[in-house]
Picture 1: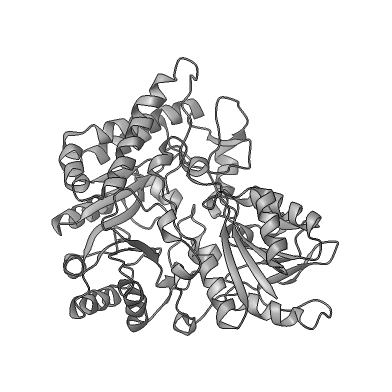
Picture 2: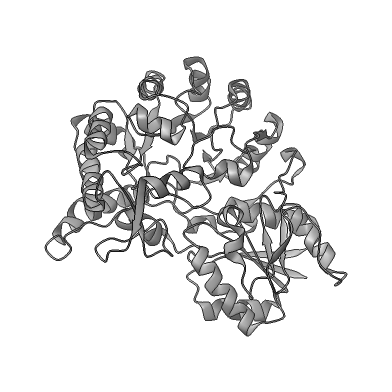
Length: 485
């Protein structure tokens, strides 16, 4: 059986709004992991990125018919759920013989939302092994499967084994070569990313932390599973041998295991791999010794998710650290000679306008190099979603657009501050941060080391956000919220 895997994402405009030209579009690692598992088991598989390949629904249907694909699978995120349902319906109408599956973070969080006549199987958790098991089962053509993490549509409901399937030993998975499934040149790394040829890789799954707004633990489990250092270096060398010189280590918290981080850095140095890289971390998971090794190994930037500088809010978010620890973490990064990036959400439960201004003021007095200020929206399936039911309400208003939850007409508004005020404060946060004298110096250091194409994206994005958007105020009294991921 031939398999077609689809990323139905709507692209940067849908996900980033006014910051779309600064948006990040990367080859989807989850789909590539599933495709690699299928290929290693002898199945013929292709990945289609609906938006990045500029496809129409009719063209997608032609691909399915011409390629004689027997199974079509969708990887679904919160911004692409409605598109996945729409495409599934059309595929089943035009190609009723095709088996349709859905998986991914949004499916794992709310699988029952994907009970539809056009969807045959729903995957929860990680599908590397379970999709191979399902295909092997389908060869018999008898009855329904009993595979962990696979639900089936029996015509009346979703049934099956709801135990989330997680891969215990990541070293046993085959190496993922993204070049086999994607044209990497079509994608957009973050505008601050150094290097000419850039790739994203992940060396762990699972998150041991309890952030109430995040879906990582629900999707990939709370137990941290890591590739061995040897295996992770095999990934790096797979791409350096192809000429890639810049990496984004996309682990949820790359530095959570200090000993492993130092070992990886030492191996990069020992093997004389001339690469640049950045990673995601937490303010309480870094120290100067580890950062020194990281820098020597080519790390130049660390990304945090501080989210707020108000301790009462951090408790609601269950971040597990304080605002003071955030400040110390930022200073450690700067002391180590690295760039520091962090996100801060606007409009969190319980926060007043004064609380938001307090975060903005504190952040503007740090040496943070880049800050992003997304407007908060609660994800269904996360712990904070239940808090938001009590601490706010969902409203429909033609003045506002929910970009994160693109399929929903309503947006969430806390009891403590109006959506209008939230969006004005989000714009104020961007302006006040990026018009600081400190940023002018930091920006020069970042900007001069970027390739021309990324420099142009930087300039165009700034113009769109700070100039073009302002010119439309007379006809659009309330600015549109935006998302930066």
